[in-house]
Structure formats: C-alpha cells, structure tokens
Image 1 (cartoon, rainbow, N blue to C red):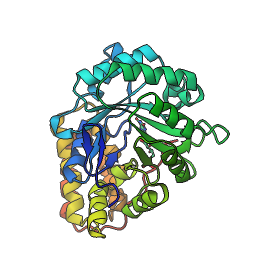
Image 2 (cartoon, protein in one colour; image 1 turned 30 degrees about the horizontal axis):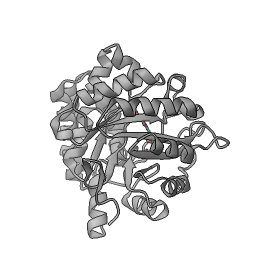
Image 3 (cartoon, rainbow, N blue to C red; image 1 turned 45 degrees about the vertical axis):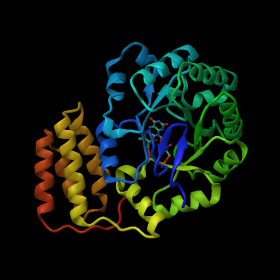
Length: 336
Ligand SMILES: Cc1cc2nc3c(=O)[nH]c(=O)nc-3n(C[C@H](O)[C@H](O)[C@H](O)COP(=O)(O)O)c2cc1C
C-alpha cells in the first residue's frame, strides 16, 4: 500500500502523509485541527527565521509553540548563516521537536536574500550549512527544496546527493523553480530523478489535490511519502480521504453536516486559544472553505465584516441553521 508508513530513524510516520509547512496557515491550532481529523502522519511548523530565533524574537517563539497532541512534529527553519542555523537547530532540539527541517524553497524576495530557495544557487555554502546543522543536533535532520532557481538551473539531484552525503535524513521535493513561483505544474519527473539518485527517503510534494493525485504521484515517482499543502485548507478531510482511499479503495465526500462541524470546530478552537490574529485567520479560512457551499458568498461577506471571533461563530451557526448544499470544494488560490 502506498505511503503506509515511513521511519526516519526513530520517528515513525504512520501513514506517510505530511502536512506541508505553510506560513500564515499551519499554526498550532490548524495543525491540531488537521491531526484530529485523522490520516496525517507528520505535521510541520510554519518556517521560522533562525536570526529571529537567536534574537528571541516573540513572533519566532510563538511560531514554535506546539502541544503533545501534535507529535510527531518537525520544525522548519530558514536562514543563510551556517553558525546561526546550527544554533537555531540546537534550540529546536532543546524545545523537544521530533525533527528539524531546513527550508530551501521559499521564493519570496525578502527570504531569498537570506536563505530559502536563494541557497540553491550557492551549493558550497549549502554544504557548510548542512554540516553545521548535522553536527549540532541528534534529532533527524531533513530538508525541503524547490527544483532549482530557474529552468536553466535545475539542481534537485545535486542538492539531494549533497544532502545525503552530509547526513541529511530525508528530502522533500517541490518540483517547481523559484522563478516559476506557483505557476505551471509541478514536474513530478524530477521527484523520480531524485528518488533514483539517493538512498534517503524522498517526500513528493506539489499539486496533490485529491487522493487519486497521490496515487499517481506514487506510481510515477516511487516516492516514500506525500506532502500536502494548498489542498489542506480547502479540504481538511484530504488526509482522512487519502488513508481511506489507500486502505479501502474509495473515500467519501463530506456532508453538509460535516462541513458545518468542521468550520465550527476550527473557529471554536481559534476563539478558545485567543491567538493573535484569530479573527483574520477566521476570515481567511472562510474565504477558502465556503467556496463550495451554496450561498457561501453570503457567509463570506458577513464574516468579513465581523469584529470579534464570537461574532463569527454566531454567523456560522445562523448560516448553517438554514438549508445548505455542497458543490465541489474550491481550488486554493495560489499566492503570487
Ligand atoms: C500560503 C503558503 C505558505 C507557504 N509557506 C511555506 C513555508 O513556510 N515553508 C515551506 O517550505 N513551504 C511553504 N509553502 C510551500 C508549500 O509547503 C508546498 O511546498 C507548496 O504549496 C506545493 O505543495 P501543494 O501543491 O500541495 O500546495 C507555502 C505555500 C503556501 C501556499
């Protein structure tokens, strides 16, 4: 069965379905919410700046908050200064995370100047970073890459080999280039090339929107685990559906009652945690999630004008008290 289980040393992912790190989305509340729905074997934090961590920046500390329920959990860091990244990785280990991951994929201008996919253009520096982090921690160390800077500079296989030689224990590949951003398609054939070139586990990522896509990814690449990003906030059942599809050959679509319970549960969790920006997250989630619901635009509009988390919950209760139907869920709008 594809993606039944994967062990990265002592950390077992069962099943090998991973929630991708997504800045602004995969905070502790969203991670627990996904975990409780079932079918997800590993969750990751949003990326955290190693420089921010060393400065004990409040935001970085908030990003690194997690609960026991979230295990196994990996923390993702970014940066470009080998000694600082090594120190940040040590802090991640001290905080009790199960694994540490290095971001080599972020395409944002602000980030590529000091890490992210910018490092794919400087392999000697990358080698020093790998060795620094490897020497600093005992927990498994993984990396997540894009395929390269541009179509002319595809370095996925080279980076994967460098990573393996440096003691990195798994590599996630999102096979788009930095210049590509989120346009076009993810070139899964590059995941296959990486899989054929290294012995460490390869995690396939990119454009998996439904269980059938995960099956095709496995068939085409032979990757060891699947990582899901944008499909998670539009269809949080995705992981459960994946598990059902692989074990029973079929999966069910959520009912109206499921949808109501889901949005209500997530909002309740956000309100109870009183996390900063809860109202903004509610608005964001409403705009992804209600696209598939009849009269969803009406709910979206009302949620957008709300001022308090409790007010949003009341709006959702009132909305679902009336009849609703569920056309297919919407595609997640890709960021620029
Ligand atoms: C809003 C958003 C935020 C993201 N933040 C991160 C991040 O913090 N770290 C990272 O490695 N990738 C990040 N990504 C990339 C995803 O992890 C993933 O590689 C990408 O979305 C492709 O997978 P998908 O097609 O399943 O969405 C982000 C993507 C999105 C859409």
